Every structure is written in C-alpha cells, then in structure tokens.
Image 1 (cartoon, helix red, strand yellow):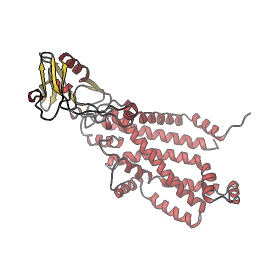
Image 2 (image 1 turned 90 degrees about the vertical axis):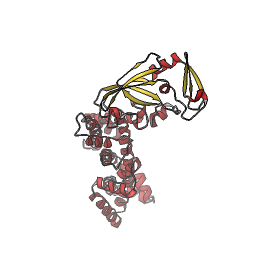
Image 3 (image 1 turned 180 degrees about the horizontal axis):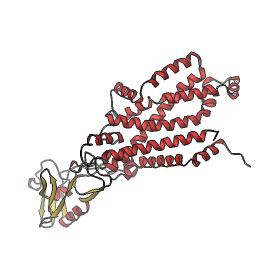
Image 4 (image 1 turned 30 degrees about the horizontal axis):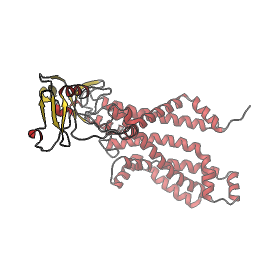
Length: 406
C-alpha cells in the first residue's frame, strides 16, 4: 500500500464534502464572470452606462425598440482584452422609441416616443442619425450640413470635409445599424441601465475588493501575529493590547472611520479600509499557532544551528500554519464582500456610476415605495447572499479538510 502526502488526504476530504464543492463551484463561476467582465455583459460600455431615463425601473424581460444616433466624434476601436477589462465606448447615443416609419422620400422617419402626456411623434432626417456631422460653421455645401441631389447625399463629416454617399446605401445602413430591439433580461435600474450588466460588473467589484482586502489583512495579521507569538513577553502583551482595542470596535464603524480619515471615497479607499479592519482575526490565529509550534523540536534545532529569528519564523514556522491561514482567509473574503456592500450602501464605498451590489441595493431601497421596483433589491441581494454563502461553505469544508481527526 503506497503512502500519500497530507495534501492528498486534505483534497480527498474536501471533495467528499458536497456543500464545500458547491461553494467552490459558485466561486469559480463568479471568478470567470468577473474576469470576462465586459466581454459577456449585454451593455459593454464603461461602467455599463449606456442607459436612458425613459426606460428606468423596467421589469425583467422588458424589451423596446432603440434608435441609435451616431455620436459626432471618433470612437476608438479596442481589442478583445482591452474591451474585456475596461469596456468599449459606444459610437451611438440611444433613445428608446415606440415605433418608426419611413416617409415618402425614405430619408426621413416619423418616430413615436413616450412623453409626459402620452405618445409624441416627430419627424426627422436619418442623415444626422447615420453620419457624424461637422459641428462648426462652414461655407461648404452653401452653409448646410448636408444636401441631397437625386440619389447622391453630400454631407460634412466631423472634420469638415465633404463626403458623398449613395441614398439607398444610407437607408440600408440605417435599417441595419440604427434600429435595434433590446431586451433587458433582468430589467433596468433607476437610471435606465441594464441590470444584468451591472450585476456582472458588481461581481468583479466584490471579488476584487475581497481579494485585495484579504491580502492586506493577511500581511498585517501575519506580521503582528508572528511577532507576538514568537517573542512573547512584553512584546506579546503590547500586540495583544492593540488587537483587543481594534477587536472592540465594530468592523463597519472602523471602516467608516478609516474612510473619513483618508478623506476620500471610491474603490481604492474601500480596498484599504476593508483590509485594515480584518487583520485582527488573522493575527490571533497566527499567534496561537506560533505559540504552539515554537516549542517543537525542529524549531529548537533551527536555533541550535544559529538561524536568525526571521528565518525561523518565515522558513520553518509559518509554512506549518498554512491550513488555518487558508481557512481564515476564506472566511475573511466573505466578510469583506459584506463590508464592501455595506459601505457602498451607505455611500462610502464604490461611487456611481461604477456599479456595485451595495449601491444597487441602496437604489432599490429608495424605490421600495414604488410599484414594480422589487427586482432592484432582490437581484443584487441574491448575488451578495449566494457569494457570501459560497465562501462560508468552502471555509467550513476547508476547516474540516485540514482537521486530521476527520
């Protein structure tokens, strides 16, 4: 019978735990969604900001016709990886419409939109919709922006140069690229933005803040816990006093204090603030582990060989605390997601227009008295609950897997 390494039995116990495997699958799926980001978002503009107030607070599965007008500026194309990470600016301005129909000359349309007192219709040319026109004054084309002569359209492009295109080509281009039926699978928010896209982007925000916060908390906690546990005596007393003081302050209050002290708001403040509030638990666990391990014979042997305290701590003691550190890091990840959501809900975390699950819950909370706004709270709340549950299930599974008694 061949012997297996301890890691083999840890993996075996972990994957035998169905709830832990379920949590791990949810985390992996969320990570894939966060990495792909804009590449899988229905609205791939930066911060999923391609919305319209005319369709705010619409329910799930809502669909509408959209009139897309070309912006009067050049929009740079980006490659897949840039788009995946930062998004791509849309070359169009959108306007939800009820219907449209061509007039006799086919270069003008009658558009029906929903106004304050019901349906409003207007007539406009499709030329400024299809082509970005010159914004300044020019003597070209007799001071006009465009002219139509038989089947040829002459217009001034954004650089002030005269361009000529075929009339039928313009009409076909309008039909193919400037009228679109959009479906909002999870509805829209209070600004008319796609809720599904915001939820996908919120996954990236939550996981990013959790990841950075855990790294900060692990670094601070390991350093302080190692010093307290290894040197003991008055050093341990001072470190324990600091830990007790920080531990006594509620986490969310400490985060708010740090945010106010930094006199700033946003994603990076949330990274630092959340990370600096979760190190105490790490430090206490590391301290307890080192107090036990420092008495082992291999540590005494390292001392006898003249190794420095720093090398003993980082080369011989800390590797033996890896199991508890992983378990604590997983639990802190879930706590960081909750704290970030709370901060954003209070307006001290991620700032609009950047989507965050916490800000989405806050927006939904403000609309609670309005009929048909329940989805604004339900969907982001479900995302927070499911991801936090996944990390807790994985943490419990890791705790049992690292327990040699199982």
